Image (cartoon, rainbow, N blue to C red; front, side):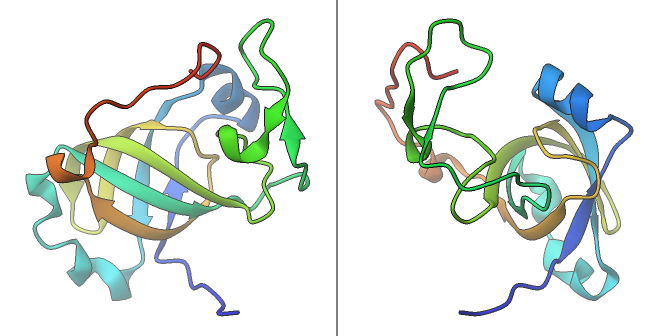
Length: 139
């Protein structure tokens, strides 16, 4: 198994509890200097996909009850966006507000302050599938 090297970190002013309760917050993705060149052209996109290492994960359950949804059934972890996973890797789509050098100002992040970022991908319309559906309890 390969080891991953963070390319940057999520930075914001919210506590972990605020992120949990608000669900989405504004943040800055601080890309490390040696990876700044890889950001060329990203400011032309409205949204980015952020792949992160969920460094505060609490365990590896295979069944969970979706949070914030009253009466939601217990389902397999792979049917949810729970941060507690066999491999604590998170994927979030955020609106790219602006780029300032190696700093990406984003909105709509569900990651804690200090979360290591493993990769960033520009979101283009071709990545958005048509006809997506989900059960009633999926938010």
